[in-house]
Image (tube, rainbow over all chains, first blue to last red):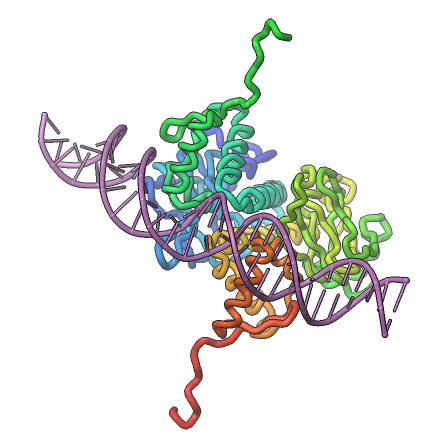
Length: 225
Length: 225
DNA sequence: CTTTCTCCGTGGTTATGACAACATAATATT
DNA sequence: AATATTATGTTGTCATAACCACGGAGAAAG
């Protein structure tokens, strides 16, 4: 199998991975852009790990309004909460682009006694806890971000967080305008307006989904220092 | 010790509890209303369980604006995410009223090998995973709730969720107006206005922090059926 | 009983973002 | 190349919630 570097398998050996696979705990699948991997209202035993592409966790209400809760990048996982608790999903997991997904029988690993004494069972459970806790942090900071009442702070705090994550002032975001609006709880045209206003004020540059944050400290000429 | 019915101790025997206590993994403390149990910027090994009273998990920004992420009721826990990951807190945990708190050395239990072979270690870890997953669900639905763009749906969906949780159309909420506004990301006076509008339209009744949801199907007189 | 303080409602003003409708650009399809 | 389709920007109108300031009710403190 390819080098599957997900936190879920931290500390798990190749041999153990092969054992998991042979017991049917792992299954890889492909998904075209827009395809639904998990659907609202279902119950799932499976957790998904994005191998390539990316996945949006989103909620569509009765009127067709979409809210994007998170975008799952390669190496990250989704659905673990529902697999572990057995709750019915209140979100869809939809491929944001053509993707490959590794499905893991998390419920089986956690719940059934079948695997309890196997060497990898404890490791996976422990890793699941770390992943769950990490997602908790993500959701918490997401709540804080989206609690800004005006649009600009929401946009800025989102762009800043991507900048920090990538370690660069120039980066691509995984959303088009509509998706970004659905992620930030803004109207698309309002988002577009505000982005252009920020561009005109010299805060940012962008083209399509590529953004650059511009420093506000106008650097004095070197001779001045 | 009193009957400590927290999900963290599900399946843990009295004897095991006593063992945990004797090893210094448990400590109970009191906290006056407004007291800070965990503070933004700190790192903690501890998780808190509310024995009595209640705790707000909240963030105060540089300008003194407060956002309440959640209210922790008796039997529920807080801080487990930070104890498990070792991340620095981005929130305060503040007593919403005079409270008693049980502090548990979660980081020690998860990380140190010291307890690895003790009978209760695995149970606690497993319970922690369930608690973390449950909190994930809570945060997710919180995000969906606060994504409503207008104030009334936010208010209604909050009141409905409390109604569902308590199983009654009449209930007390754990917030005063300012706190409810900080929870729903609304201005206090705007919240007050909207609540009164909803009252005038016959949707709800309230006095202080007691609320009653009114059915909108005007029941026809019995004779008509 | 009086004073103080906190909590809550109210009114008025204003900024802002939702919404609808359209224009233009970019991309995909044939 | 021509056409359809999707993505993004633009404009204008309108409803709404933020904000500020105040007054009253009720609780707590003296």
